[in-house]
Image (cartoon, rainbow, N blue to C red; front, side):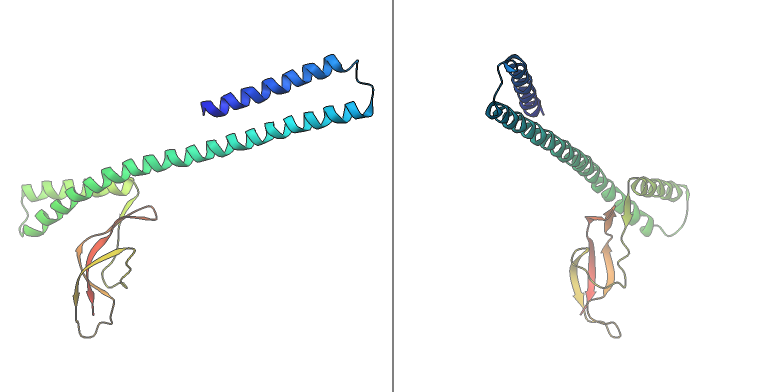
Amino acid sequence: MSDNKKVKEEVVEEVNETMEELVDNSQEVTTEEDIDEIDSEVNLIKDQFLRLQADFANYKRRTEVERKEYIELGTKKVMLELIQIVDNFERAIESKGEKDTFFDGVELIYKQLMELLEKNGVTEMNSLNEKFDPNLHHAVLIEQKDGIEEGIVIEVLQKGYMIGEKVLRSAMVKVSK
């Protein structure tokens, strides 16, 4: 950004100097040729200034996009770590058959983590019985299953998650053959 400011300041300085020269020389300008030369010089400087303004606007847009991407990347890293915690809680909940206070506590933490993920734009993929999509799924097993057409997800081994419209983590699935 400082490079753009320097260039902008230089162009503004050049425009100011040229304008001062034009004012100083205005008494001396008598021919049409001199006026044309000054006009072309002013137009050249105006063109440079407009290009600099356009470059600066593009620079601002580009840095805003980069800033958003860095924020999204930071969020993505945190969400990936939280998903690992969610996976462990799901395993604990599934292994416990009867409800007691420990189980209730684990279930409460699981719900809170899921709310946190949802609040940050992370949603769980619904992959079971869907057509296999290599952009969303990671096939780790293939199995022949009667009555199910080929390429359908028949089991989700590890849930997949989206952040907005982007895949945060692909679902690990078993696919019908």
